[in-house]
Length: 253
Image 1 (cartoon, rainbow, N blue to C red):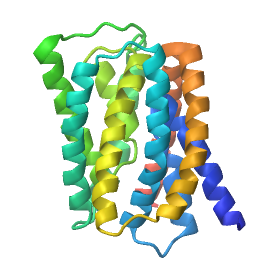
Image 2 (cartoon, one colour):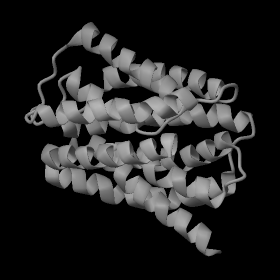
Image 3 (cartoon, rainbow, N blue to C red):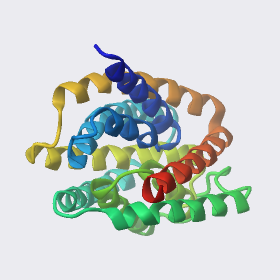
Image 4 (cartoon, helix red, strand yellow):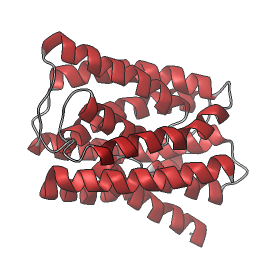
C-alpha cells in the first residue's frame, strides 16, 4: 500500500468523524480522492466517496437512534422523498457539469454561517415548530431539495440538512444532526445505486475506505452525544467556515 492510499484512508477516517457530528466530511475525503486520482472521472470519485461515507453515516444513525428521540414516521417518509431526489440529481450528474453550483456554493454557505452566528441561541433548545402533516410536508420539502443537491453535487449536504432542520423545523442541533443522518443515508444510497449502474464506483477502494469511515463515525457520534447541542453548534460553525474557504478556492482559484 502506497503513501497516497494511506492518506486516502486517513482522510476517510476524519471524514467519518466530521460527518457524524455535523456533516461536511466530503470537505476532507473528496479532495483527497481528486488529488490521488487526478485522471479519474468526477462522477467515479463521487460515487466511490459515497460508497465509503454511507457506511459511516449508517453507523452514526444507529448510535444516535439509541440515545436521541427521533420522529421516525416523518423521517422515514422524508428519507424516501430524499432518495428519489438524489436519484434525479445523480442522473443529472452523468449528463451535465455542475460548475454553476460550484461557484455559487461558497456564497450560499456564507449566508448560512452569518445567519447562525447572528442568532446566538439558535439550535440550543429542541422546540419543533410543526406537528403532524405540516411537519411531514416541510421535512419532505427539505428532503427533495437536498436529495437532488446531494446526488448532483454533494459538498455540505449534511450541514445544509442540519441548518434547515434547525431553522425550519425548530430542532436543536443534536436532534437535527441525528435526523440529518437518516436523510443522508437515503441520498447516499440513491446516488450509489445510480452511479454504480453507470459504472462510476470503484468497489474495492470504496469498501476499504468504508471501514475507516465507520471508525471515524463512531468517534464523532460519541463526541456529539457526550457534549450535546452546544458542541454540535460549534462544530457546525467550524466546518461551514472551512467549507466556505475550500469551496471558494475550488471555484475561483
